[in-house]
Image 1 (cartoon, helix red, strand yellow):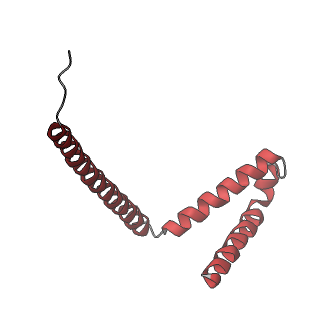
Image 2 (cartoon, helix red, strand yellow):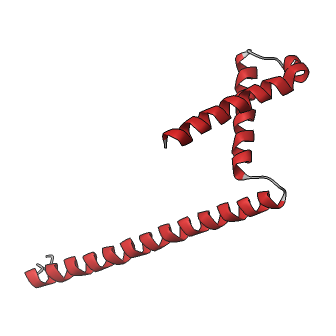
Image 3 (cartoon, rainbow, N blue to C red):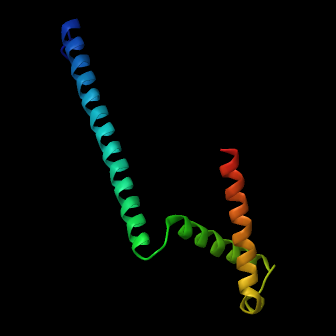
Length: 110
């Protein structure tokens, strides 16, 4: 037959559980802070690397945005590789202008 636990034993088990839970919560918070710190360090290192080459992360994000836009347009059939080759600079310039005007609009609102 199973041993019946006294109220004191149950309370002690609950206290141990709560202490363990608190330790795990502290560890979780510490790991989250470490993750944020590593992310900031990585972002700073990336920014420094881009600046070494005369670039900026904003330039990178703009480039990625333009590239994804062109990819979407090609996949949708709105532009072809041939037209991009012939008129690529105009298409890219138009997209950059659009992105910059949107960014400027967001900055003015914020």
